Image 1 (cartoon, each protein chain N blue to C red):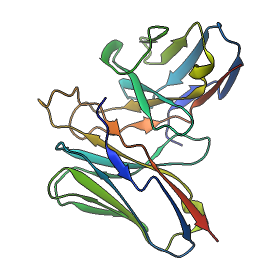
Image 2: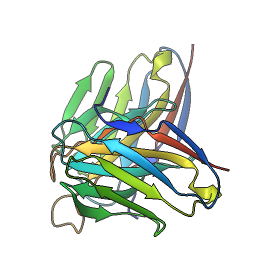
Image 3: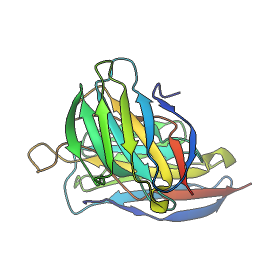
Image 4: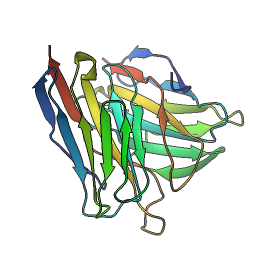
Length: 115
Length: 114
């Protein structure tokens, strides 16, 4: 099925560093969501974006809805050990695009933070 | 706490067996989704129910089935289990359909088929 291209696949960084990850698609989306999954737990919604160009923050996390509507970015500033986990992007296609409206998930970015 | 409850947390069974996973959505949410997450895999959409009716189907095997009951809880039935069915199974609920929909996930059921 259709998937989003999420990159990087994994990151290993030093505590205090900033992190950037993104999701891209060849198709237009009208909603972008970013989730974080801790080991053994379900994904937790971090940020939701509904408008092209929208920039939204949640603490040290900032996400942007790309102007082309085909991509989204998530940045984490001053990373800390508890940022460890898998980050998923999810997008929803516009009505009439042949999609039932269900969310399409990226493959995830695994983040490891070295204290 | 997302408000979505899944039971059991862990399930260990043998090949050929049948199991039932249960999900209670957030209070007021009419829509329930089931996802499968295998090792090193992303979230694979299985099936969606809305207010008791099947709304969308993803990559769900014929050996798997689901239903949503009048009280809105949902069950995912997995039969003739194979080793490859070992995975984390997540349920998610949503209160809003279409544009702007957000999914809230449960903690998952870890299924191990031995």
